[in-house]
Image (cartoon, rainbow, N blue to C red; front, side, top):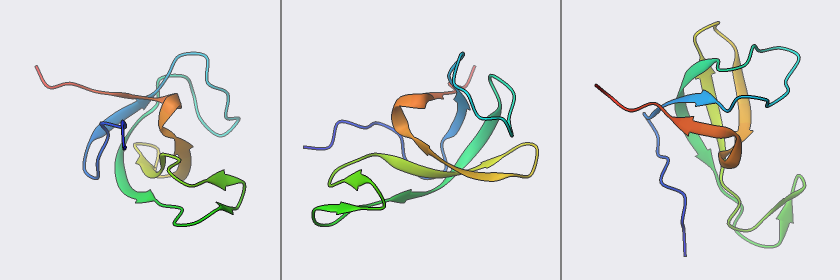
Length: 75
């Protein structure tokens, strides 16, 4: 069962304290795609892992596990 509530097009930010030398804490971006693993393990990811390609406001595209992302809610 898929418990991840994030989807393509969602505005997200990196959770406080997540380290990536290319980004600052709280960097914001849009989910471009969800990377899926169909069977077994691919590139170190197990089946069902929620990993996303994110386009950040600084122009960088990076892959992040869903547990390091917070959805930005609209006001």
